[in-house]
Length: 110
Image 1 (cartoon, helix red, strand yellow):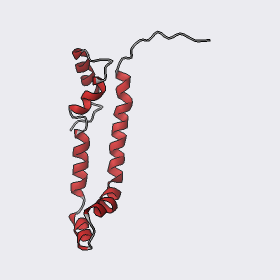
Image 2 (cartoon, rainbow, N blue to C red; image 1 turned 90 degrees about the vertical axis):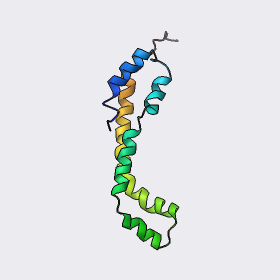
Image 3 (cartoon, rainbow, N blue to C red; image 1 turned 60 degrees about the vertical axis):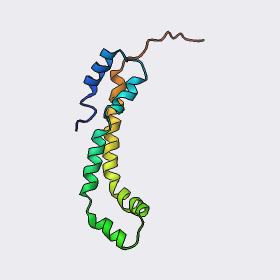
Image 4 (cartoon, rainbow, N blue to C red; image 1 turned 45 degrees about the vertical axis):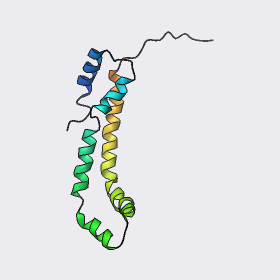
């Protein structure tokens, strides 16, 4: 469980060695190779910590599964989803800074 920020430079070096710079694969491969693994472990650990009694009480009251998800699980998950979003945003801000841009011939039009 390593955040994407720590694997940013090694990922850049691998992509550079493979000759995939300035291609769409630079954006696709990190997610395929497990960019979301940290998020899955983080969310799963959080949801396992939620007391089972909450779900049992809702079931005894006759709440269907979609109702339990919408009215119990999602409101309790707002803080962890916010943390995960912030982690992803920090990675998404840093990633383009490590990718070289194509040089384009631009001229001023008057």
